[in-house]
Length: 169
Image 1 (tube, one colour):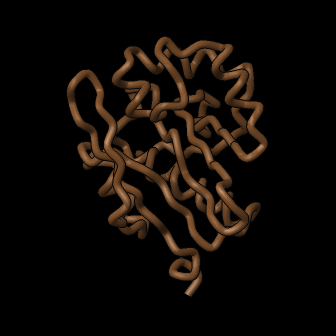
Image 2 (image 1 turned 135 degrees about the vertical axis):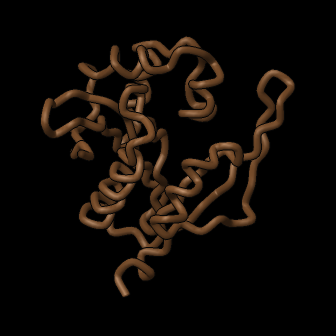
């Protein structure tokens, strides 16, 4: 039976969980992009919470109130918001569709609270599971890509967008 989740505000009390889920520099970059440096620290997370355009959440199991992940909405303009830093950090719960559920809940939160015309996100091209998840929801790949080099390896980030009118028609 699939677990049910809900999103709850990410606060200082959640720092230890998030820090424990990111075990190396590669995982941190894949999860967060370049905004943090490894090792992730409480000081970095304090700075992270200060941005008024950032809406971070923890992903929580309904039946146990166990925090299993993290996700964020970033308001880039009045019309565009970005979904970012989505991770099912507790590896026990990966591969169960909970990232998909969290993404749907983020979209609903955006529509209810920020009312954007477009929701976008960035995902590394090798993260095929996430790409399939986002495509299933209705996100479309754009030609907007960005390359990052990690220890001599080139990573390509793909921008994907979801037009809100496509959801409401």
